[in-house]
Structures are given as C-alpha cells and as structure tokens.
Length: 111
Length: 118
Image (cartoon, rainbow over the protein chains, first blue to last red):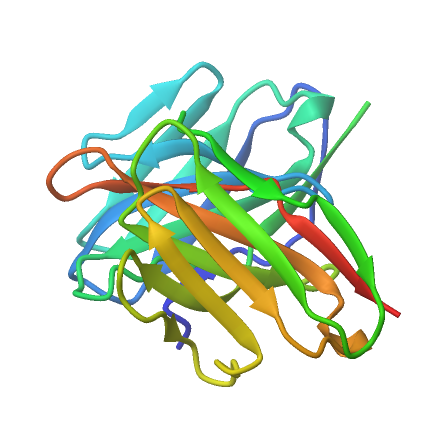
C-alpha cells in the first residue's frame, strides 16, 4: 500500500461545478497535512494546510479525518484557472522529516 | 508564503559535463532542504534530503557520487549533476522547510531547473 494515495484522475468538470478530492495516508502517526497545486511545467505551490478542525479559504475547503486517515479538498464554483494537478502531502513526525507526496490528481475545468 | 529561489531556471549541457544548481531560501532559514526530480507527466520523486552542515541522505536508487549535494548554510543548498547523460534530463526542483509551529513545517518549492543534456 502506498503511503499516500489519491483519487486517480483526471477530473473533467464544467465551470461552476463543485469538485472534491480525497486522499488517504497509511501512517497513523502523521502530524501535518497539506494540499499543493502544481501547474504544468511549474513547481508545486502550497494551496493550504489542513488542520484537524478543518479550514476554509475562499472557495477551497480542506478537511482532515484522523480516525479514517484521510484528507479532502473541496473546490466550489470551479474556475478555468483551477485547472491543475492537486497534490496531497503528508508530513510524518519522524526523525527524518520526510514529506510524502501523493501522485496528484489532475483537474480540468472547462467552459 | 516563504520564497525559495533556484538558479539557473534552464540549462542545456553536453553529455559528460557537470551542472550545478543553486537553491536559496530568501526570507527564512531552512534547516532542511529537499531535492526532487520530475519527469514529464510523472510525480515528484524525492532524490535526497539535506540538513545544514551534514551529509545529505539519498533515496534508494539515487547515486550520491553522481548527484552531489552541499548544504553550506541555512539559506543555500546546491545540487551538482556530475558527468551528465541524456537520461539525466529532467525538471529538478528544490524545496526548503519552514517551521510554522512546534510540530508543523510547511514546505516551499523553488521554481525548478529544467536540465537538458544533449
């Protein structure tokens, strides 16, 4: 089993749609969680951190479920500019501080 | 968010030569920096983790004598691809860890270096 698994993509949605990404992680001791966005041929950029209480930033909502070991990202009112690959990232609290990246889910938002 | 710079952004070199890539954290001190490689349409692959003042830890399958990493200070790490071959052509991305709280570290990425070996 992979340490971090994401929904296989791609997701193709029309503008204005709501889309949800799920991600599961295997290490129950994991401490921190993030969603990154990566545009084609660009570096990943931090979209938002994911806290136990959940957090919202405009059209984006992230949730963490520690009991089930999954995190989610909800995008409301999708825009064309949301088209990108979304990476789920888990940071285990280990001596090596090794961050684990999911393979990413590609999102295409179409007019 | 914190800023990480990377230089050069693109480099084309001949097979057999060496290429050095610099990664700098501009407005924060990074005790840990990471080097990734990404081939087209594939995920980021962690190559190595480097802590300031100590030897880098390489991932399995990554040749430490080929990919030399030097983390000279809290704001600078370099990756040198020695005796480059066409199969080393890839997008190399560095990342630096910034501490947000006692347990939460956020990771910021440089803009990447596109290496083409001819």
